[in-house]
Amino acid sequence: MITMIEYKIKILGAQYAANPDYKFGDLETPEMWDRTIGMLSNLRDMRPRVVLKPEPTNTNDHLAVMARAMGNKIGYVCKDQRNKVRTMISQSKRGMLAADISEVVVSEHGYLFVTLKCQEAIDDNTKEPGFDWGEWHTDTPLLPPMDALHAEEEAEFILEEELLPHLTDVNITELETYLGIWMEGSRHDMSHEASRQRELYIKLLEESTRDEVHELADELKHQSGSMCSLHRLEERTQDWWPSLVDSDEAENMWGRWREQTKGQLWGGLQLIDDLLRQLPGNLYQNIGHMEALFSQLYYLCIPRVALTTILSLLVLREKTCRELGIEMRPMTEADYETCLPESSKFSMKDLASSFLKFPTKIALGMFGGVSTLLAWHPEWQKSAPQIQEQILAKQKEQQDRQEKKQDKMIEKVEKAANKKTNEFIVYPQAGSTANLGCQMQSPEFKVIPLSKEQQKEFYRLQHKDDKDDGR
Image (cartoon, rainbow, N blue to C red; front, side, top):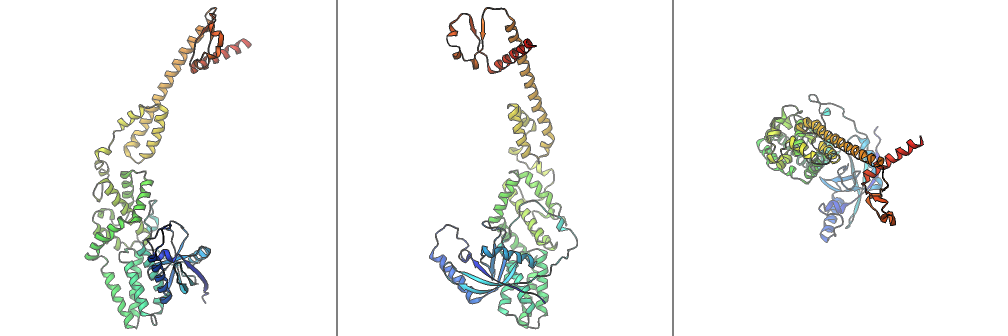
């Protein structure tokens, strides 16, 4: 017997969901209020199923739990109940929960209540054979889930939990609506999960004894057979891919990547290529031929998490090539050097000479900073020890020169101290004679201003003589 847990959850933020372009702090308009009231009125009249799902990409609250219905966001779980809902989502093993609308308050800043029924789901621990995608991972930034994926997962959840198990008496309009949402969201989803779900839905619909249900399988069959058709690949290459590369999400990811690689475009390109070369099926060689690449991604049966990583790397590579002004194509190790623009090339000999123009303390600090920036560069790795050795050699040469100068000064001071004379030698601080007062007028005083270094050496010798006298 399955134990059901029922909670009444408050959903807030309908005015933001109904007006996704609204920015916090902007003035609200009557048009905004109309859209909010319209959305809440539709929810009250239609009473669609609601999906509760975490939204970790929310910049205002990474613990937020969004509420979605019919492919659209309708609000967020209130913060007082957020942690409880997140716990139930974690226990469900599905990553989301289904709920029914129980009450809707229609107003300019309205809200709604949903009834949440929670039960533990079976955890699928099956592992796909072949390339171990679980062992392949990167530290590069990733694209966040797009709205199409949210809609796809929401529809998938409703279909599997609420509709497909009850095909004998399911509402055809609702079933057709959620199948349409799922198909639109999975239109360019090349993941293994999407392919597996598509096959499952076709099988279940074809097994139904209801003709209107059975007919819905034909649309899924058509989508399955056209995932890598020439028309679909052209659409994916010419429309879907450019819009993904130029999206705000991709631009934010690109900014994080530039920061992570400290703006080193060529070094970043090499890192991306090293990761892509690890993929099976010699996939890296299809870079630049996007139709073939997308077809290969589909037939490799790649898990969604790994596919997201691959697409993120490809987006970063596309943006890097644009920035460098080079073609999006596979590269050899020699290409990274030969394709480097003349303005970006530098001589390690010249770089070493530029360090030696500065005082050694400054040069060593600069060397440390440049070492961090150019750690990826093969030429720097070879030349860095020699450059550091030259800086240290210059530092020792300066120290030796300073020691010789001090030795000469000491010798000169000692000679002056041992010379017989009736004159008194006065050494004022920092070369100033103001502290001598009237003594300056006496012929018995001879003022010899010394530098700070000379004063220190004189005092050291004087202190040494005092010790010797005491001995």
